[in-house]
Image 1 (tube, rainbow, N blue to C red):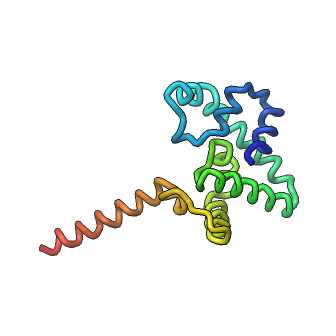
Image 2: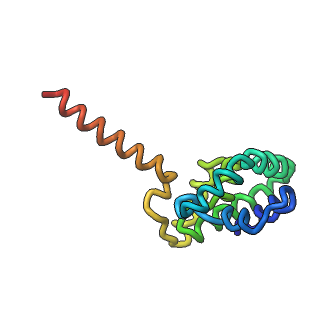
Length: 144
């Protein structure tokens, strides 16, 4: 589903096949060579990608903005709730909280299982869990 956004970026930035393939991958699933290529070639241009998509998104009608949200959510649900690189860029434009909320609701409604820690944004959920456990432990240690 991210093809819609990749096509816009391809048209604007003349992306090659390697760029397009990387934009469709989840950042956690990229191997070492692809990761080096990404951080050398795509990551520095990501701000420009975001600015271009932001200007297009800002010029859309509310109905079309809703379609962008639905497209990102559908793309993420195809991978169990994990965003690929393009989805991540579009999420920053739309707003990650609204995307994750919409995705969670749609997953519940359609009975789609999300991968672990996806519903709260991945590493953010893990961080909250670690902080909560640490706070409880410190409370009991300080009580003695």
